[in-house]
Length: 103
Image (cartoon, rainbow, N blue to C red; front, top):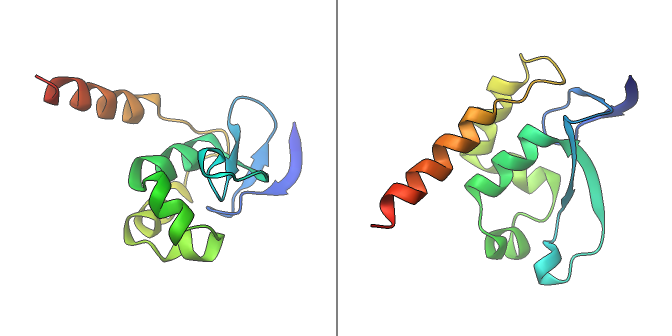
């Protein structure tokens, strides 16, 4: 079911369900209160590229997030995907890499 909203990061239509998440422009850990709907894959990308300190100090608006080079590349790539698209292997690969680097 369409929710008639557009993702503020990738500009694709959002469809209610597992593909939707909420993003705090100012991280909750840094006293951020307001959260906005966003695609889950977009939310994961933001947090894989930027630390909470970076989000709090500079990347606390959609336009600033979109100025980040890696986010721009991601948006260009994901804009061609179906609104419910989510590649869980991208997240898993990152977690596996972190696990392997601990030892």
